[in-house]
Image 1 (cartoon, one colour):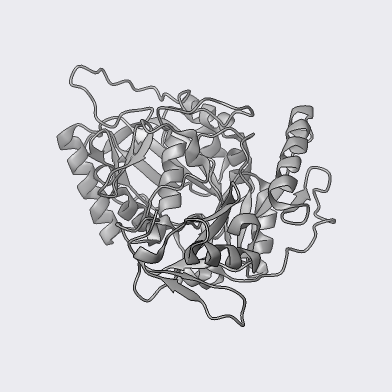
Image 2: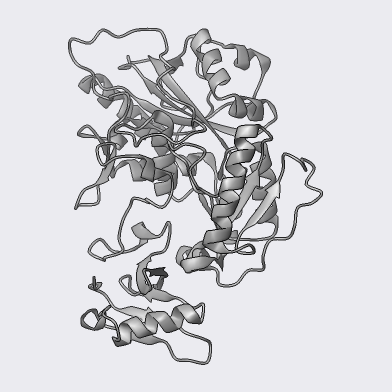
Amino acid sequence: MPNPYWIKVYFDKDTKPASFSPDRQVEEEGSAFRNALKKARDCKAYAVCLCTRGKELPLAIRLRNDNNSLAKYPNTGKEHVMDCRFYSRLIPEGGQKTYTDKALSESNSGIVKITLDYPLQTRTTEIEQDKVIDDEIPRRPYRNVKKRNTMSLLGLLHTLWETAGYNIWVPGMDGKRNSTQLGYNLFRQAEKIQSNGILLSEVLMTPARRGTKDEARNKSVLQSAIEKKRRLVVVSELAQFSDERKHGTGRLPVQNFAGMPFLNIDDTGWKSALQRFSIEARAWAAGFKIFAIAVTDVPGPASATVRQVGLMMVSDRFIPLDSAYESVVEKLLYENKRTFIKPLVYDSAESEYLPDFCLTDVTAGDSQPFPIEVWGMKTSEYLAHKEVKTEWYNKEFGRFGWWSWDAAHDPQGVTIKPFPPAERDVMNEIMK
C-alpha cells in the first residue's frame, strides 16, 4: 500500500539515499522500491516518512514471508499527519493488543474511543453508594487471557500516559518534567479520548496548584460534572507516605489537589486497594512517586466519594515502573544518557511478550527497538515462563540482540552487564 507522502530510504554512509514519490512506492517483486528496501535492510539502515514538513519520521523495514515492507516505528504513529498511511494514536505493538475494538478503537477523525469497566455517566434510576467498589480493577494475571471488551481504570491511566508520551525518555527531557505539567499534558490527550460519548477531558481532574490555570480548569470540570450528573476521573500523585495516610484518613491522600472536591474514601476500601496494589504500596513507603487514578460518584459542590482506585509507580522522570528492580535499570539508563521506551501493559497478562524497556538508540531485528528484560522472581511458574520467553527472544532477536538482568538471583546488581553502545537515536530525533 503506497503512502500519500514521499518516502526516503537510506543505505550505507557512502551511498546516497533514494526518494520515492507515492506513485513509485510499488512493492511488487523486482521494483525499484522493493529493491531499495532490501538493500537498506541488508545494510542495517532505515527508511523515513516525509509527511511532516522539516522532520524525517523513522519507519521500520520488516521482513515478512521473504518480502521487505514498511511499517511505522513503534510509538511514533501520532507524530505522522492524519492522512498518512502510518498515522495512528493507538500503539497496538504493546499492551493495547489485549483489547477488542469494543474496548479500544480509533475513529477517522483521530478520536480514541474506549469502553470502561465503570461508566462515567450515571442513569437517573441508579442509586449511588458510599462504599468504595475496588474489586472491579483486576491485577494483571500471570496467565494468558482472552481479549477484553472493556478497559479497567488502570488501563485508562496507561492510555493517557502513553498517548502523552510519558513512557518515553530522551536525555534532552532532563529537568523538564513535573507533576502539574504532566497533568496539563494528560488533559490535552483527554480532549481526544471518548468513553461512551463523553470526552474524557469533560470529567478529568489533574494535579494543580492554587492560583493557577490548572486549578481553574479543575473547578470548571467539577461544575460541569455536577450539572450533567457525571462521575469524575481524578489523576494525581499520592502525598508523601505516612502511617496515618496508609491506614486511612477518610480522604484519598493526593497532593496538588487545587480545584478538586474533597475526595472521600472509605478506610476499608483504601486498605483493600493498597493490598491489591501491594508492589506500589511498598514503593510508596520506600519513597517512590506513586500516581493514583480514581473514579468518583457524581460530585457535590465540595466533595465526591471515590468508587475505584488504581495505583502506578513511576520514576523521578515519571517513567512507569512495575517493580523496584525496574527502577534500578531505569536509573542506569538515565545515568548513561540513553533513549528508551517503557512498554505499558494495560490489562494484558504478565506472561505476554512485552519487554520491560526498549532502547531506541540501538536497532534490533526488523528495525525494532532493542529489548531489555528484568527477571524478578523465582517461582516455578515464573521460571517456566522465563525459559519460554528466553527462547522467544533468542529466536526473534538472536542471542545478543537483547539485554537482561536476573535480579531475582542478583538483587544487588553485581552482575549487571553494560548496555549495548548507542547507534542511531531515533526517538531523540523525533523529540527535537
